Amino acid sequence: MSAVATATAFADRTARWAAVGLGFSIPISTAIDGILSAVVLAAWLASGSYRGKLDAVKHNPVALAALMLFAMLMVGAFYGDASAQEAGRYLTKYADLLLIPVCLVLFRDADTRRAGIYALASALVATVALSYALRAGMPRPGWLIDDLFFHVPFKHKLTHAVLVAFATFLFFQLALAARTPSARWGWLAASVLSVINLAFVVPGGTGYVVFGTLLLYAGYALRGYGGLLAMMVVGAHCAVLIYQISDTARVRVDRALQEYSAWTTGGSASAITPRAGVEESSVGQRLTFYRETLRITRDHPFAGVGTGGFPKAYAEKAREAGSLEVRNPHNEYLLVMSQNGVIGLLLLLYLFWRHWQLAPRLATPLETHLARGLVLTISAGCLVNSFLLDHTEGLLFAWMTGLLFAGLDQGRDARA
Image (cartoon, rainbow, N blue to C red; front, side):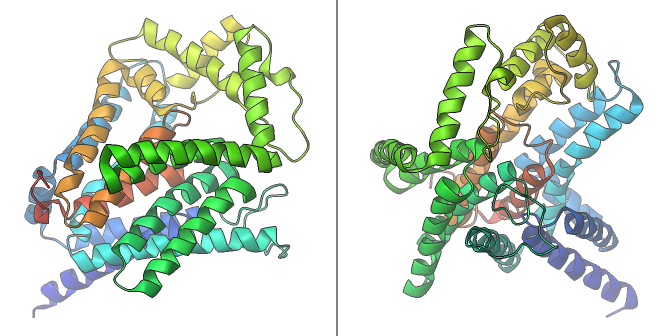
């Protein structure tokens, strides 16, 4: 083997295992994410075979949909009133979408995909275990995040709840795919412990939205519409049970209803005093964000105010309404539509639709269900947060989409 071939083979192995390592770091460390992402990109570029990489991307509809959305975001950076710095800041956050075509190549091997899935699962097991350890009174070491109120080890409360909600689904799917009884029961136990963590240890509204969505899909995936109906009944009973026995969950629900009532009657959501140790609900504020963002969209329906133009456009509406100024409306659909118009929104929905539509053609049932669970997690979460703008959620979506859809060419027939 020539020196060039040896070097490119080494670069390819480095890129693949750095990509696997990224799966472990996403739930744990933003700093390590940055290092591994740089290694992945550098080694991917150094590994050559550019024609094969281009062909892999050209023949993958999900990758093309992601690139189309990013292209629109890039175009949006050149119009509107946003400064070059502001446009660049927003565009950089969406650059995770470019990881999808990179990972399509790196995870083309089934064993590498499996390693990536287990790397993510291992990090999520560690997240749940450390959360319980902190709840039990373990002194918080310096390498965990500093949080005085919530038992979260690596990420702030909202992101932790979303990761744990997805973990319940991931562990359940791994249990279904397990080949031995011990592995099956181990993953089922991890899934149950994750549900309890979400319900009682670190509850979160967005986590509840994601968990409820995944619960319904799990029922549908197992038993069709009968399973969906069964999960609706189970979910309703679980929600009532959690409300009755969890003080934290009950306070959050009651407060959310109070804020909604105050907002609809013209009151001030901020006037409601939160209880000590309970994060202030933001229902009223978010509804105001949505209303003012829709006003921006009404004024700029076709192409929006440009990538990075939201803060300035919203500040003008907020001054008129006497409300708070924000940098994003906590809703990805509204953010994209306000900045890139109906065109941007349609491209975002197209990406999610192709993700869902093509999932049955992936290499294994496990990958099919994880792909659909992933897009449900992100699309549901985008209703109440700007997930593609957020580091952990956006990177998780891009990394795992690339991993799963790397097996699309090996997939089963769509009718399966």
